[in-house]
Amino acid sequence: MVEWDVIVVGAGNAAFCAALAASESGARVLMLERAPKEENGGNSRFTAGAIRFAYDGVDDLRAIMPDLTDDEVAMTDFGTYTESQFFDDMFRVTEFRSDPDLCEALVRQSQGTMRWMHGLGIRFVPIYGRQAFKIDGKFKFWGGLTVETWGGGPGLVDRLTEIATERGIEIRYNARVVSLVHDGHAVQGVKVKTRTAIEEVHAKTVILACGGFESNAEWRTRYLGPGWELARTRGSRFNTGDGLRIALDIGASSAGNWSGCHAVGWDRNAPEFGDLAVGDGFQKHSYPFGIMVNANGRRFVDEGADFRNYTYAKYGRVILEQPNQFAWQIFDQKVLHTLRDEYRIKQVSKVTAPTLEELAEKLEGVNAANFLDEVRRYNEAVNTDIPFNANVKDGRSTVGLEIPKSNWANTIDEGPFEAYQVGCGITFTFGGLRIDPQTAQVLDVDLEPIPGLYTAGEMVGGLFYFNYPGGTGLMSGAVFGKMAGTAAAAAVNEK
Figure 1 (cartoon, rainbow, N blue to C red):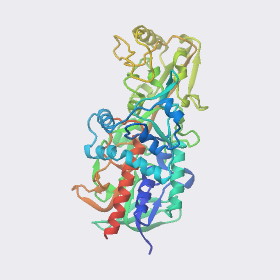
Figure 2: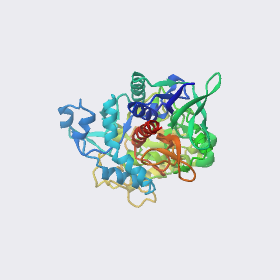
Figure 3: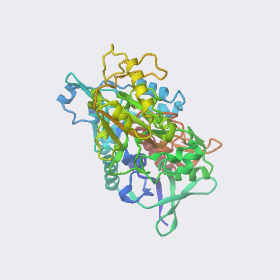
């Protein structure tokens, strides 16, 4: 009977980082992926590849992007994103709930992990076009997010797969792990369901990195609350909570925000699960430069409360809570040039009209009279004395509205007008397993380490609450994946 040193469950960013770290330490690694090969990569394949990490200046960026040219540096204000700034963002957006030890591991190890990934052969590039606007001939990055992986999420997954294969790591697809082999003390392998049988595969350690329960409508309703079965899933249809279930079954401790998730404004007519051909194109994230109205024709959030990076992951929940679970994003000619590329895809729920009155009649499901009144009141409240600047929180706000717009407030008065209908798209769930923040080893309900069991990625509980800074998911997956792989291999070597 073949026994592996490390079994990694999953084949996304976190799983590959775990597998590669374990392999670097000499472990024999097997990866088990529930999806068929053509759908591999979990949620990582559906991301745009943005990845948040701490850096002190352009030299740190050049360490992971050595092909960054002098001309690019000269025409770009990359700014800094220090560890202190990263900490501030993490605690601010999670309302100071983020586990401090997990958060410290994430932030302190972020730059080193990026350098490690670059050393593996992962290519990074600046996120021009999505995170920087060109003002007076110079790009300026905002929101602490500067870098993405070459080829986005698909490029990241494909490159990680190539690297793992080159290093002799075996990957089995269509292999759904249904339970852990556990003797009451230690994990000794997994039971795997293939298309033909269920078999036991033995290993000295197991790393679970197979996502949350965002694709499980019943679990969403159970843990997130009524109505969540109506959300669309942005990513993989295979993330149904299998890893969480099998760990809890042997006494693992749950942790974190089980009633919380990352959820965004997502095209109202998107399919039930992510579409690899469209990727993340169904998202609609330029709302800070327009307004959003619900079925009653009323605004319901401060669209300009903060940079998109710090609000998009929580506004999906707010949209789901609106009448009939949708909203319309409204833009006029002044800001159309700021709309991200996802607004130009073919599969989009969009209406246009030369006047607001005609637009009101085209907004399906919306009270037209209320909408026109809302736009009138909003336009009268805009403080036009402050100049509009998309690169900073410009303070161009409304005055006297019950729901303010704190930044980037422009009157909606220059036609033709464009409107986009959005619903809620869930990305990943925040609840997960309790881990040792130094090793990513899973703890049991008595808060004791479970020998042989580690976890990474979406399955780590306690890092995110209520909200999430954009790009932190891939960084978390890489940091805790690398940590889990290194620790699992060390545990094997100690046996």
